[in-house]
Length: 259
Image: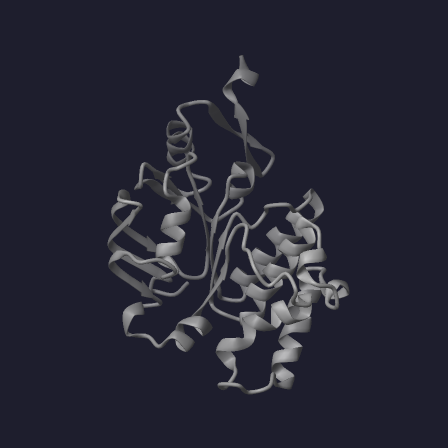
């Protein structure tokens, strides 16, 4: 595992609509692993992820793989980090293939045509996400799950070492959620880093590490198999869930179901 953190934030503050959402967050995310971000509704998870991706204005310092993001050119940032957001709008008239090709823009010259490498990367990403058969269909005509797989392919097509995803399991059925999990693991085995905001806590517990956000602050950061992480998880959800081992995995259950 690399000694240099994948992402490092110092004093990260974000205000939206006149309300402070992030309160001076300090966070170090290790490279070569998958970190899941979880917490109650309105805790600031999406805001944190967007701030780390430099997709919204934030006070503080953010570094990717040891480099200050403010000193990087936009094209360089685009090659280093790939983003998958929730409920992304627009591009409904574009073919799915063209949407995925957008992920290759950081690798192309200004107004240059896609290269053979670009086309190969797009096909590989769409095949990995099971969306190659959708390539000729407009994005707006796809189901929610199909659309999500195409957008995931766009993120993978970038080939970036840092992969940040906000609610990536939205609209995916259980088999495709399993496929997604395999893709994240593949990305990490290849030396990449994944950071995902997830509401599906049992899936988040498959990650290497868990960051818990509550009221715009980091409530806990630790390994998903650590008992302290499990207790912190129960606390941020006001003890309405409990973490239990099932075989080699961990699951959560509503406390009411345990009475």
